[in-house]
Structure formats: C-alpha cells, structure tokens
Length: 287
Image 1 (cartoon, rainbow, N blue to C red):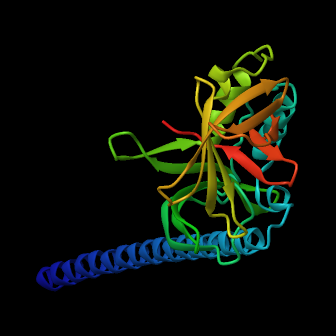
Image 2 (cartoon, rainbow, N blue to C red):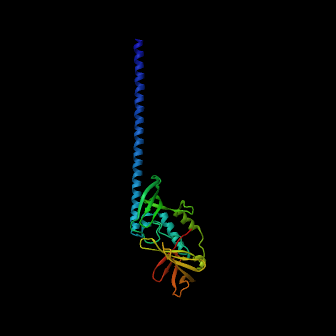
Image 3 (cartoon, rainbow, N blue to C red):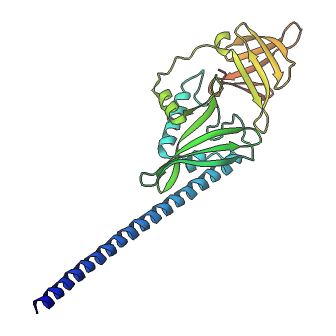
C-alpha cells in the first residue's frame, strides 16, 4: 500500500514540474512575440519616415528647378530660417563682402536649371524618437553635379531641413565639407568690419557672368596693378585692359588702343559688377 502511495506522489510531482515548464515556455513565447511586434512597429515607423524625407527632397528640388522663392519657408526649420535672416540683416550693414555667394539649396550662382534631380539618396542616420536624420545625396543637373547632405529635424509635425552640408575638393584634391549652419553661426559671431573704399588690392579677383542655364559664360579678371583681362570661358583668347576706380564705379579701357571706357557699378551686397547693358559679373571664391 505504501508503494502505491509513493508512486502516486511521484506522479503528482512530475506532473506539477511538467506543467510549470509549459507555463514558462508560454510566457517566453509571449515576450518574444511582443518584442517581434515592437520591432515590426519600429521598422514601419522608420520606413514611413524615410519615405517622407525622400519625398520632401524630391519636392524641394522640383520647386528649385522652377526657381521658387519660398523654399526656406516650405522646407526649412525655424532655426535655419532665423539664422539666415540674421545673416541677411548683418550683410545689409556690410558694404564689401556678404556671406552668401550662391543659392545654398542648389550651389548655383544664377538661375537654376529645370532638370535638378537628387540621386543616390543615402540615409546615414535616422532617429525617429528624437526626430533627427542625416541624408546624403548627389544633386544632378545639366549644369553641374554636386555632393550634398541634409540634416533633418522633425518640427511642427513635418520633417524639415536643419542644416546643409556642402562638399568640395580642397587644395590637395581631397573631398572636404562644411556645415552652412556652423559657418553662419561663426559669421554672426564675428564683429562687423568698417566699410572701406574700393582699391586695386581689395577688388582684385575673378568675376564671372552666367548663361540662362547657370553655366559660366565670360570672365573679367581684375589685377592689383590696375590691369584687367576679359575673355569667354573656355577660350584661350583674351583682351587686356587698364582700369580705374571712382567710388563704386570701375571703368575698363582697352590697353594700348584708343577706345571708350566700359564702366561697371560694384554691388558690395552681391559682390558683383554690372555694366550699362545689364550684364552682371559675380566675384568667385578662388583658393
């Protein structure tokens, strides 16, 4: 009789252990299923964010290709717009050199071409919880191809551009980059220099005109010794001049030939020379 009682007790213990193991396995499965669902939700959120950001980039450059004037308001965050406004306000008080020398959205110095297109869009960083993203791409057009990067923030319910990173080749031919936001903030921290009169020394440089597609067309070169040159871009032929400065007016006279002067008004805000016929030459940044 005792053997039967002992056997029955053992069966109850084994049954209880088996039941406990089944309950544990069920709990583990529920946890794994919850984690899987969370992962699927996270993937879905990230995918949606990427689709929205790519759509914004494409929409932005569709607007830029039509030379829209409200791109900052439509696509940039408050911090970007406020910083640009502060830079423009400072530039209005600086006669000689302003901060912007190109369209920061397209890197063009004249009208944008109508075939702008962002290609090879790559997400380098995406944090949907913090509302931050970094996206690199190639901006292609019939005029030029440039490497760019946008830093995004999530603001007012939308993804907006917080910073533009521009890439360029340095003096060693290596690709370098700079942040527009950081550069603007540094520029704003610098004291405003007193306006100085135009001289051969501070006007010496390269000034280019551009065609309707934004390509460099012709060039004026002003030298520190009071001589100048004019030529069509890509041509080896050029005309030599001497020039004089009277206030903000620069007049060129063909060297060694009796001819009339051609005069240009210098605009310190746009760093440009404009003649009476309306041709405009913009100063180029040359290392």
